[in-house]
Length: 122
Image (tube, rainbow, N blue to C red):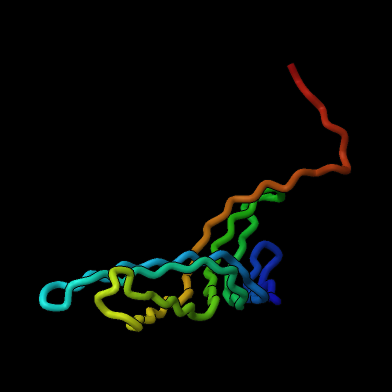
């Protein structure tokens, strides 16, 4: 949704569904007297939301420039790691990995005019 305060400017907000792959891993190493290792890893596809705002300016009839900010939130993954050495039977550790991102984009666009014939000059 946006507003055009002039024929060459557009200010807008955007939002919607977001998805992406998430890969997390950790490796905890205990030092004496509590020696041992606890590794953990996970790979999932996450679904969440995105929202942002931007502005676009028409430099000429064919060229535009745009700047945009997006906040992406895919929730939080919890990855569980177990003792791999047997020194701590039944011990596990959960790590939380927030999947939140800030995205800033700058774009330069060229609009082709497909209604007119292409003319080449040599």
